[in-house]
Image 1 (cartoon, rainbow, N blue to C red):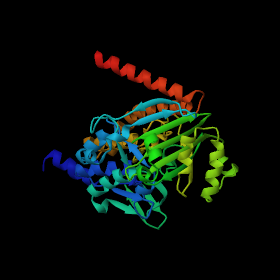
Image 2: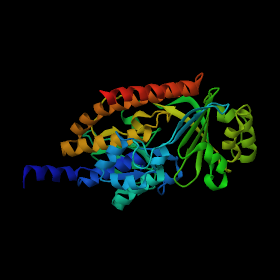
Image 3: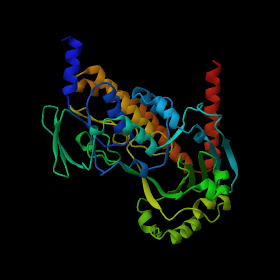
Image 4: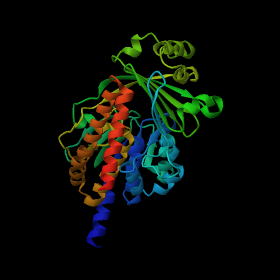
Length: 399
């Protein structure tokens, strides 16, 4: 047996556990599988819930798309992605239009859209079904002193693994193995609404929103509309508020018709065309708080454990980087594991410094965008920021 074959054989004997079956965890398992390395995903939910969580995601050329290429799924992604979803419109509360960007044709943009459920479904279709185990809620991960960890689950199951990867989101159960830093409230609360079949049910709002995203920004508040691949319009009402605002504002989200009237009163001086994002909403309203980890968050490296995605560098959603960072993390970690064979500690040592570099820049951008969007003259300032980016890009293209 050659040295390379021996290394591969040893590598395959390593037991790798991924906690969390979201885009990051699925991408990591897929790239490892493509390279002949086994892993197991433990997912707390009883079934795949990705279609029920979140809306449309823009997958970036330099990060998420690179990961899909490593997973061997780029062509499949292109067939499912919505390049027209890159349309973007920006208003203030008076209905004044600041930006109106339309995607030019198909398959030309750098950040096409795909629904979270479709993306994860594509990954699940390609994965060996035995890789993911549903109904396994991690309660404790116990270091065994040799780089291994014993994983204990709520259902009574235990597993001993050589590498545990926390891909379990904002309130990760793996993160405490590495750091005592917790996610902190970012000062922004959202209420999520949904408008089904918007093109047929409400063509006037479809015409206003176009095929991608709409932002309306004023008074430290925002109305954000996002067209999903199933024809529904996902709406986010965003407020700069204290953490307990959802509990003290007096809006009962379980009484949707009354709640919508109360929400309209919070936007009573906004243009009637923008108020339609509330008026037309269905009877499901969900409150969400935005949390963040400190920009540039790092930890002391430990044997046999690491983090990807929100577990590692939770950031606000206002730069569209969350899923892309998770998928880039997955690719970086998978490739490091492939390079270093059975030496998982060396793989972690290669992965983590690289992850800190690129994720800290994205986290900084997300934080800055949050401050801009919920600051004074937000629509005008956001337009100026985009203008500067386009100018810099044009200058670089002419060099």
